[in-house]
Amino acid sequence: MSKKVTTASRGFASVSQKSALLAVILMAGTVTSVAAESDPTSLQAWDYWQSPASPEQEEYVASKMPAGFQVVVTELEGPVFADANGRTLYKWPLENLRNGSTGDRKDGKSECTDEVLTVTSGLMSPYPAGLVLPNIDQRPSCVEVWPPVIAAEGAEPVGDWTLVERSDGSMQWAYDGYPMYVSILDQKKGDTLGGTKIESGGDAPAVRVPVGPRSAHPPIFEVIPMATGRMLITEDRYSVYSWDGDEPNKSNCFDSCLDNWTPVMAPETAVGQGKWTVIERSPGVGQWAFRGKPLYTYNNDPRTISLIGSDVPGWNNVYTQRVMLPPEDFTVQSTRIGHVLADADGNTLYLYNCSDDAFDQLACDHPDTPQEYRLAICGNGDPEICRNTFPYVPAPTDASSESGLWSVMIINPNTGHRASEDEEGAMHVWAYRDRPVYTFTGDEVPGDANGDAYGEFNGYRNGFKAFWLRDDYMSNAYSR
Image (cartoon, rainbow, N blue to C red; front, side, top):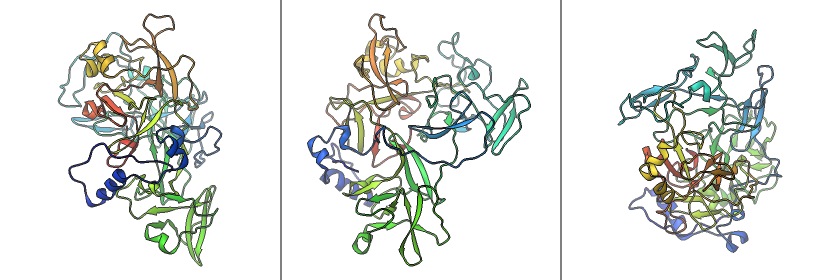
């Protein structure tokens, strides 16, 4: 990956032996490309994105589906199932929380009902059960936010698709044992605003997850969803790399090259398919290649799911697909542990996470949901304090982005809800996945991420997380 890792702003008091190698890389800096030398913070200086003209999309294993259903390849989530109207399908898998669990059990009935819940469940200590939720006179039921995917009369199971009877006697489609839903946030084909495949972090709520077909790759590999795309790793979760010094379907990594890089070997019985090929390193010895690029792991990777090997000039992490470029004025900044997305002035961007503690775990991170939780965290209920602590990121009224994940939203900064063009005090702000992004007043210089984990449960349940592109010590880059 073309990049420049600048001096770390803070050191760690102690690190493991492997992490010490990483600390040297972060503090010493690495070779940069010509683009990075001209402006190491510009979006174009980094390999995190792909062009809208790029044909790269994740391939999937085709399978039988109910009539009218389809597969849509989305920018962030890759291939997902959608109904006849193009609406993405989601599951709500059972999640163990601090004081119990909620969600749908595999091969069980749907727990998403038409009951309007008005009090907390007590699943997340230290908060007790029975606390009255905000705006109970306006709170929707689970099925109003997550309409179940109802099967037509006479529908029959097909492949991994089965039917689950709901309490009203209607039949709901289920995939791989989990009841299916659509999200009221999704307005057009390819939207995945209701949830993400990116792994939950810390004390995250019981979230909804987009459902899609299996990725088409050999069994030795996996795909890890990240904020920058869908990255290839091995079944042991070590990152996979390609080398610019190789030729199409031909490895040039031999002798001293193998001191640092290990070819991902293919068994003798392996057969190429689609974008996957088996190349011959020597008679009878095969190596996996993807899109013509031989694949390797990095012997010096200090941890699983790493981007460290891409600091070596000419070596790159491998993705089935990446997201497109964020708004052009944004920048990439180096922090003490990795990279964050930032505004034009280098201020780290933040995302807000929120879910209430009712049994149906409805999200409260969107402008169309109650704002009491956010105002409590960032301003003790005072909108002005909140605006000053985590300011919205202003956007030009005519701004746009190559990426469909980014949009301009009109917000009433006092209420946090959507506003009309002519509403007094309304702001045009940048939104990611239909949710505003913020900066933090406590960040003093580019690369600061002092607002990360601000809020309850390290920012995963009701609070703020930095917009991580890379995290060399923890899991921020591949957890939500």
